[in-house]
Length: 83
Image 1 (cartoon, rainbow, N blue to C red):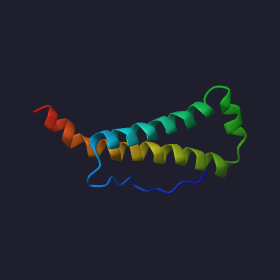
Image 2 (cartoon, rainbow, N blue to C red; image 1 turned 120 degrees about the vertical axis):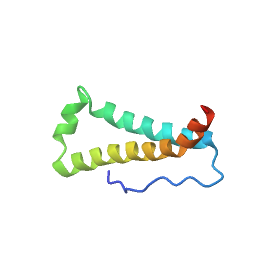
Image 3 (tube, rainbow, N blue to C red; image 1 turned 30 degrees about the horizontal axis):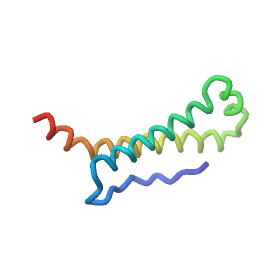
């Protein structure tokens, strides 16, 4: 489950709704991965070797970082709507 640390790039003509959809998709993916290892799923996670656990957590982290980058793209529009 290796992941590349690639910052999401939105095309210049990407709508705010498209960016929001991409952001929420990343957050849902991260949530699903975390739910799989929470509670009883933690036993399966602990049974993984160290490399697999590190890759799994790295993937979760990358998804959250990507969502954060997308949120930053929405920030100017949010600030403008509150002026």
